[in-house]
Image 1 (tube, rainbow, N blue to C red):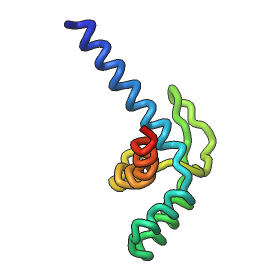
Image 2: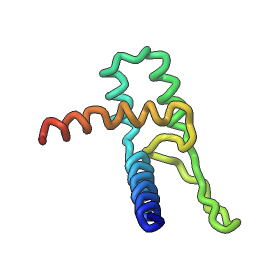
Image 3: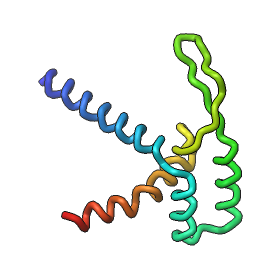
Length: 101
């Protein structure tokens, strides 16, 4: 039983890592186009474009900080809208996968 739980935990963690890696690969321009196809209000789209065009990040590893860099893709980790934006981005991909069998 314990080995089954460990295997399940590893599987869940592996899926989360894959989702996180995929979320980082989201192209902002493609996301904006998909949001336009969903007919979101132009004002909200402008806010998102402004918000994501000013995203900077840095890496903190063991107390050492890397230089700040501009993020060119992905959604904000922990952002309230991030799961929704991710779902919009992958929606047509999931549909294509279902259609292909």
